[in-house]
Image (cartoon, rainbow, N blue to C red):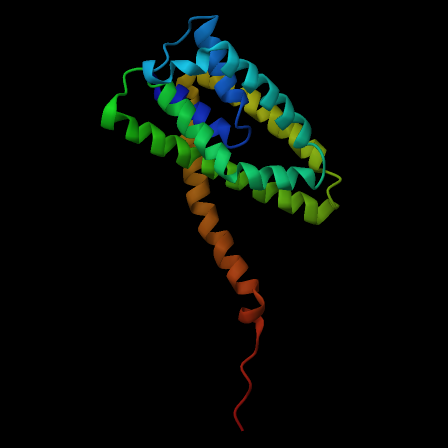
Length: 196
Protein backbone atom coordinates (compact mmCIF):
# COMPACT_ATOMS: atom_id res chain seq x y z
CA UNK A 1 0.00 0.00 0.00
CA UNK A 2 1.21 3.45 -0.85
CA UNK A 3 2.12 5.59 2.16
CA UNK A 4 0.10 8.42 0.65
CA UNK A 5 -3.07 6.34 0.98
CA UNK A 6 -2.50 5.00 4.48
CA UNK A 7 -1.20 8.17 6.04
CA UNK A 8 -3.29 10.51 3.90
CA UNK A 9 -6.45 8.85 5.19
CA UNK A 10 -5.07 8.99 8.75
CA UNK A 11 -4.33 12.69 8.25
CA UNK A 12 -7.94 13.27 7.12
CA UNK A 13 -9.26 11.34 10.13
CA UNK A 14 -8.13 14.15 12.42
CA UNK A 15 -10.78 16.37 10.84
CA UNK A 16 -13.54 13.81 10.34
CA UNK A 17 -13.03 10.48 12.09
CA UNK A 18 -15.47 8.53 9.95
CA UNK A 19 -15.48 9.69 6.31
CA UNK A 20 -11.90 8.52 5.49
CA UNK A 21 -12.52 5.06 6.94
CA UNK A 22 -15.91 4.87 5.22
CA UNK A 23 -14.37 5.88 1.89
CA UNK A 24 -11.63 3.28 2.20
CA UNK A 25 -14.14 0.57 3.17
CA UNK A 26 -16.27 1.38 0.11
CA UNK A 27 -13.19 1.49 -2.15
CA UNK A 28 -12.27 -2.01 -0.95
CA UNK A 29 -15.73 -3.55 -0.81
CA UNK A 30 -17.39 -2.34 -4.01
CA UNK A 31 -14.66 -0.87 -6.21
CA UNK A 32 -11.88 -3.37 -5.38
CA UNK A 33 -9.32 -0.59 -5.60
CA UNK A 34 -7.35 -1.78 -2.57
CA UNK A 35 -6.81 -4.78 -0.36
CA UNK A 36 -7.62 -4.54 3.32
CA UNK A 37 -5.37 -6.01 6.00
CA UNK A 38 -7.03 -9.41 6.67
CA UNK A 39 -7.01 -8.76 10.43
CA UNK A 40 -9.19 -5.70 9.86
CA UNK A 41 -11.53 -7.14 7.24
CA UNK A 42 -14.47 -6.28 9.53
CA UNK A 43 -14.33 -2.71 8.19
CA UNK A 44 -15.84 -3.98 4.94
CA UNK A 45 -18.79 -5.70 6.63
CA UNK A 46 -22.30 -4.31 6.11
CA UNK A 47 -22.85 -3.54 9.80
CA UNK A 48 -19.59 -1.61 10.07
CA UNK A 49 -20.17 0.40 6.90
CA UNK A 50 -23.75 1.21 8.00
CA UNK A 51 -22.42 2.43 11.35
CA UNK A 52 -19.82 4.59 9.60
CA UNK A 53 -22.52 6.14 7.39
CA UNK A 54 -24.56 7.13 10.46
CA UNK A 55 -21.51 8.46 12.30
CA UNK A 56 -20.36 10.43 9.26
CA UNK A 57 -23.76 12.10 9.00
CA UNK A 58 -23.74 12.82 12.75
CA UNK A 59 -20.29 14.37 12.43
CA UNK A 60 -21.32 16.56 9.50
CA UNK A 61 -24.35 17.86 11.44
CA UNK A 62 -22.89 18.25 14.96
CA UNK A 63 -19.80 20.02 13.64
CA UNK A 64 -21.92 22.86 12.25
CA UNK A 65 -23.75 23.78 15.44
CA UNK A 66 -21.90 26.44 17.48
CA UNK A 67 -20.79 25.22 20.92
CA UNK A 68 -22.02 21.69 20.15
CA UNK A 69 -19.00 21.49 17.85
CA UNK A 70 -16.68 22.09 20.82
CA UNK A 71 -18.25 19.25 22.80
CA UNK A 72 -17.95 17.06 19.70
CA UNK A 73 -14.27 17.99 19.37
CA UNK A 74 -13.60 17.14 23.02
CA UNK A 75 -15.22 13.72 22.60
CA UNK A 76 -13.20 13.13 19.43
CA UNK A 77 -9.88 14.05 21.00
CA UNK A 78 -9.58 10.32 21.60
CA UNK A 79 -11.74 8.97 18.76
CA UNK A 80 -10.00 10.74 15.85
CA UNK A 81 -6.52 9.37 16.65
CA UNK A 82 -8.06 5.90 17.06
CA UNK A 83 -9.76 6.26 13.67
CA UNK A 84 -6.47 7.45 12.15
CA UNK A 85 -4.63 4.46 13.57
CA UNK A 86 -7.33 2.06 12.38
CA UNK A 87 -7.51 3.33 8.80
CA UNK A 88 -3.69 3.41 8.53
CA UNK A 89 -3.19 -0.16 9.71
CA UNK A 90 -6.24 -1.53 7.85
CA UNK A 91 -4.93 -0.10 4.58
CA UNK A 92 -1.49 -1.65 5.12
CA UNK A 93 -2.51 -5.03 3.75
CA UNK A 94 0.90 -6.64 4.34
CA UNK A 95 1.39 -5.45 7.92
CA UNK A 96 1.35 -8.25 10.49
CA UNK A 97 2.50 -8.66 14.08
CA UNK A 98 5.04 -6.04 15.12
CA UNK A 99 4.85 -4.57 11.61
CA UNK A 100 1.52 -3.03 12.58
CA UNK A 101 3.07 -0.80 15.22
CA UNK A 102 4.39 1.82 12.80
CA UNK A 103 1.11 2.44 10.92
CA UNK A 104 -0.81 2.43 14.21
CA UNK A 105 1.48 4.99 15.85
CA UNK A 106 2.01 7.20 12.79
CA UNK A 107 -1.69 7.07 11.87
CA UNK A 108 -2.73 8.06 15.39
CA UNK A 109 -0.08 10.79 15.49
CA UNK A 110 -1.13 12.36 12.19
CA UNK A 111 -4.80 12.31 13.18
CA UNK A 112 -3.91 13.88 16.54
CA UNK A 113 -2.01 16.68 14.77
CA UNK A 114 -4.86 17.52 12.40
CA UNK A 115 -7.38 17.22 15.24
CA UNK A 116 -5.35 19.67 17.34
CA UNK A 117 -5.22 22.10 14.42
CA UNK A 118 -8.96 21.74 13.79
CA UNK A 119 -9.90 22.21 17.46
CA UNK A 120 -7.61 25.25 17.84
CA UNK A 121 -9.05 26.81 14.69
CA UNK A 122 -12.57 26.28 15.98
CA UNK A 123 -11.77 27.85 19.35
CA UNK A 124 -10.25 30.86 17.58
CA UNK A 125 -13.32 31.14 15.35
CA UNK A 126 -15.64 31.05 18.36
CA UNK A 127 -13.59 33.62 20.24
CA UNK A 128 -13.48 36.08 17.34
CA UNK A 129 -17.01 35.64 15.94
CA UNK A 130 -19.01 34.30 18.92
CA UNK A 131 -19.41 31.09 16.92
CA UNK A 132 -21.08 32.77 13.93
CA UNK A 133 -18.34 31.68 11.53
CA UNK A 134 -18.13 28.11 12.82
CA UNK A 135 -20.56 26.74 10.24
CA UNK A 136 -18.54 28.27 7.40
CA UNK A 137 -15.31 26.93 8.91
CA UNK A 138 -16.94 23.49 9.18
CA UNK A 139 -17.96 23.54 5.51
CA UNK A 140 -14.40 24.46 4.51
CA UNK A 141 -13.15 21.54 6.63
CA UNK A 142 -15.63 19.21 4.93
CA UNK A 143 -14.35 20.25 1.52
CA UNK A 144 -10.76 19.75 2.72
CA UNK A 145 -11.58 16.23 3.97
CA UNK A 146 -13.23 15.26 0.68
CA UNK A 147 -10.24 16.57 -1.30
CA UNK A 148 -7.66 14.85 0.91
CA UNK A 149 -9.59 11.56 0.87
CA UNK A 150 -9.80 11.64 -2.93
CA UNK A 151 -6.10 12.47 -3.18
CA UNK A 152 -5.28 9.66 -0.74
CA UNK A 153 -7.23 7.12 -2.76
CA UNK A 154 -6.52 8.30 -6.30
CA UNK A 155 -3.29 10.35 -6.18
CA UNK A 156 -1.41 9.09 -3.12
CA UNK A 157 1.92 10.53 -4.28
CA UNK A 158 0.45 14.03 -4.05
CA UNK A 159 -0.89 13.22 -0.61
CA UNK A 160 2.59 12.26 0.61
CA UNK A 161 3.74 15.79 -0.20
CA UNK A 162 0.68 17.32 1.51
CA UNK A 163 1.20 15.28 4.68
CA UNK A 164 4.93 16.02 4.87
CA UNK A 165 4.32 19.74 4.34
CA UNK A 166 1.66 19.77 7.05
CA UNK A 167 3.87 17.94 9.56
CA UNK A 168 6.77 20.35 8.98
CA UNK A 169 4.44 23.36 9.30
CA UNK A 170 2.85 21.92 12.45
CA UNK A 171 6.20 21.19 14.12
CA UNK A 172 7.52 24.67 13.28
CA UNK A 173 4.36 26.57 14.24
CA UNK A 174 3.21 24.89 17.45
CA UNK A 175 6.33 25.67 19.54
CA UNK A 176 6.07 29.32 18.48
CA UNK A 177 2.41 29.48 19.48
CA UNK A 178 3.20 27.88 22.85
CA UNK A 179 5.98 30.42 23.48
CA UNK A 180 3.62 33.27 22.51
CA UNK A 181 0.92 32.01 24.89
CA UNK A 182 3.42 31.68 27.73
CA UNK A 183 4.54 35.27 27.22
CA UNK A 184 0.93 36.46 27.34
CA UNK A 185 -0.03 34.42 30.39
CA UNK A 186 -0.97 36.39 33.55
CA UNK A 187 2.09 35.18 35.42
CA UNK A 188 4.41 36.32 32.67
CA UNK A 189 2.81 39.77 32.76
CA UNK A 190 3.20 40.22 36.52
CA UNK A 191 5.79 42.84 37.35
CA UNK A 192 8.33 42.11 39.98
CA UNK A 193 8.03 44.79 42.67
CA UNK A 194 10.97 47.13 42.94
CA UNK A 195 13.12 46.72 46.04
CA UNK A 196 13.38 49.73 48.28
